[in-house]
Image (cartoon, rainbow, N blue to C red; front, top):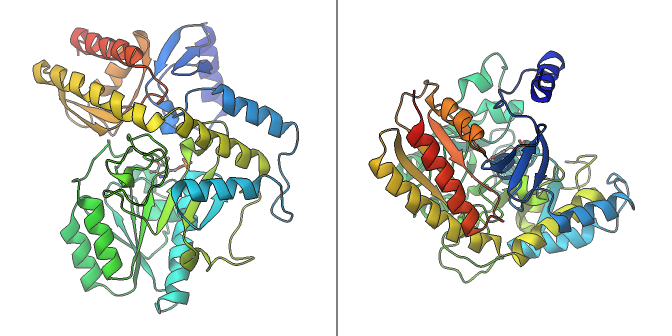
Length: 421
Ligand SMILES: *Cc1c(COP(=O)(O)O)cnc(C)c1O
């Protein structure tokens, strides 16, 4: 039996089957590359769902991890630590907010944002206690906790996990009128939670003025605009945040015309460059001040190891100009793929922003074609995964070079051209 098969069998035997991984067993990563247990090298075109924007085992982040792990890892928030303050100063200035609340996973950060929004509405906006509703978009992905799946459209994610948390109103994505209708027609709306680009749903990019119009409506109705940038943020879409629109600055800048300032910004994934679970919720004082001692917390949230790693991970994004690189390579990628789509029967379209892209396979949503193409891509040295049936997401680490990207496009085009159903 191969080493790979042994590892797969072990997982199948002893692990819960809550994922359906592509059959490849990885043992090493460096930059844009991954190696399996047999030593075969692959281009990573998923980046752990955009958690590894800075590339695998980035040497600078690794150095920080080693030093901090050897010094102090966890104190709990019962005491102060000497890394949290510098990290909080750095991240709030970086993204242009007064305050940050550090957590660990993305779903926890989303939960935190929902809690803050409701508490703010009751204490600062005269909404009747425990009645606050939050508007979300259909086909959203915000994580896996009971509250978060309460407003999911994914039946597999919900089935037999109820009863669910009430207080959510679902509207179609990319539909300003639907938002306006709910804001005008329903009482006790406290917030609007949105992914600037829907990643898990298949990289749906909304109209270019969608976020701005939503933000204006939220402001008009005194409702908090909450951006879940766990996947789209931290340079992935060619700007620091997807809500930055077309600005290529490497940090927050207030003069940019396209910027849509969220009332609450939710980050995770690449915040740690893939080294450690670090998530964060950012807001200004008028909102974050509703959080007082005892109202929210996490044993690991804000721990010195995570804080040190996240600070360096953000420095890397700025110093290596990853947003600019994502934008440049993204344009090259979509241009090449569009030419390929135009002459391919198997691929229907390419869409995305920066280096968050997807192609749609010309087949029904429940066909296995996209999966089979991903197996063929694997055999040709590139790892990607279907999301929602016939859509394949392409999201390499942002440290990729132009030459490597062309190499990857060659692999994708060759694989699909030679693919037989
Ligand atoms: C991945 C993701 C989450 C959940 O993050 P976890 O760390 O897996 O809990 C939430 N929202 C978006 C947009 C995501 O992509």
